[in-house]
Amino acid sequence: MNIIKLGLMDYEKALSIQERLLALRQQDKISDTLLIIEHPPVLTVGRSGSYDNILASKQFFADNGIAVYDVSRGGDVTYHGPGQIVGYPIMDLKNRGSDVHQFVVNIQETIIRLLQTEYGVPACREHKKYTGVWVGDEKITAIGISVKRGVTMHGFAFNVNTDLSHYGWINPCGITDKGVTSLQKVLGKPLDFDRVADLVVRYFCEVFDETPEPKQLSELIREDDHATQA
Image 1: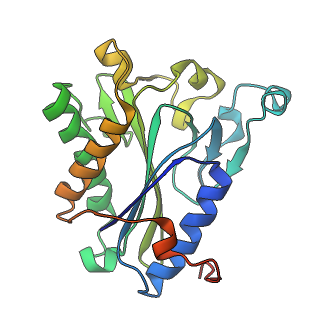
Image 2 (image 1 turned 180 degrees about the vertical axis):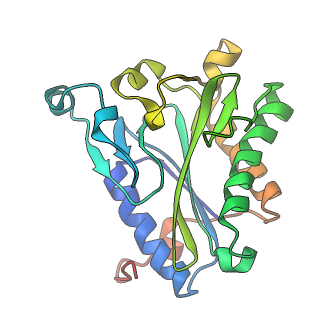
Image 3 (image 1 turned 90 degrees about the vertical axis):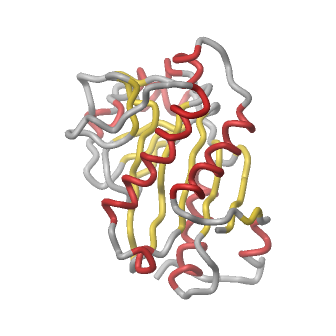
């Protein structure tokens, strides 16, 4: 599996990269790929989302340079920001039985296994009404994907050192009766972000039975490659 770490990147640029890689994967020009990214503060609204779940004013977002994007993933409104590990798997599910439910379960298992094994955090997926990964009644990882011609895009957002006060701008994922948390909040101390990102890659590949192959984006996308989403 190609592993590409893009660091802190604007959401719109990352979305464009996802779409280009999606087209290349649909054409079988690249193998399955996992992007690991951190975003500046941004909101995204999924296919079933409602702007009623955005609580702050348009003026607040304009004054603070915070964009809001309508995107093709499932789910409602969510937040991305510094201190959060965002993973975008670009994977052909036709090679995995086209089982979207199992794909989501595997993402959950990645974070659950990491939290339990490395940090002793009792994470779970037990909220049948809601997706994601939970610590008690607080969500630590949001999951929202789309599948196009059998290939996935979008993915998961794992709160590590995230500023949780920013979730006051929204009803996260449209949920009003549960909270959100971060690994920093659970453990009471900030984490080495890069080390946790490496652990995410390790456990993701372990759960999906893949061997990680670190790559540069330029190895998959040439500047003259104008592949577009099909």
